[in-house]
Amino acid sequence: MSEALRPNFDELKARYLESLVLRNYSPLSIRQIGQNLRIFLGWAKARAIAAPADVDTQTFEQYKAYLSTGYVTRKGKPLQQNTIIPRLYNVQNWFEWMKKKGHIFANHTAGVQLPKIIKILPKGVLRPDEIRTVMAQPDLRTPLGYRDRTMMEVLYATGVRAAELLALKVPDMDLKRKVLRVRHGKGGKDRFAPLSTPCCRFLDRYLTEIRPELIEGLRPYGNNWIQKEGTAGDTVFASVYGGPFSAGWLGQLMERYIRKAGITRPISPVHGFRHSVAYVLSSVMWCVRYVFGRC
Image 1 (tube, rainbow, N blue to C red):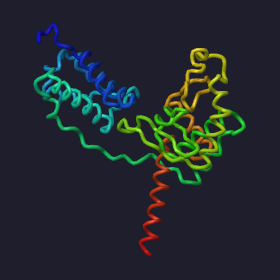
Image 2: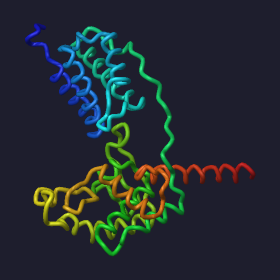
Image 3: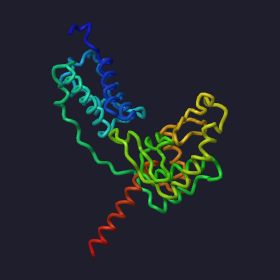
Image 4: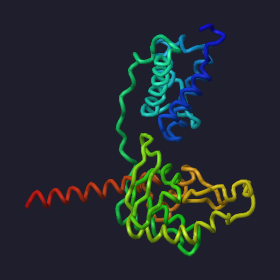
């Protein structure tokens, strides 16, 4: 293949991301992988590395060193080791794909060893009494307060991730069977999560009474409201403007309720609920093993 016809970095990146769609990767995973590849390409182009064949083991070692010592975040801080790992791993997988497709003869990035994963404990786990205090903070007399409480009920009942919560669709709710369907979860796979009876009660009223009001938009002014009105589609949880909202906004919202509840120690706003579910389940399993172990 002549150099004129050989696909460039950007074309190969686009083809690779398209292949991930066909392999049923979640949109969130594809977006994260694309961002990691874009960072690598920016580094490569700044050093006049124009083609995949120009990337050898030493070059990729230099990129690894750059991520470890030369790259800084928007806050001016170095990258954490667990952030560096997927940035390297995604590039290695991309080059392996290029090798299998015949775009390069060898994947020299595969010889670079990835840093070891550092297990980081959660910032904090909310106790059951603290969960109840936080869940009592939203004003259930208002549409937004009822929506927020319903989100908390879903988080605590299922332990879903923030992105999974915000991606829930109305057809994913099966209140009769008390389950919800998480589409394209971790690993791009669908799964079902059980719902508690109180959670179903909140969801029932939210879906029939509160959500239709939110979809129409409660705040018809400013912040491009006309462009956002009704854009939530069949997404379960809608913003005050009638559209979807981001995981960052959800974190800020939960942080306010946690502080309002008088909890001042470091807590992961959304993960605090998720890890609390795991903590309660592990405690229950320990009690079951203890009781039956004595029988």
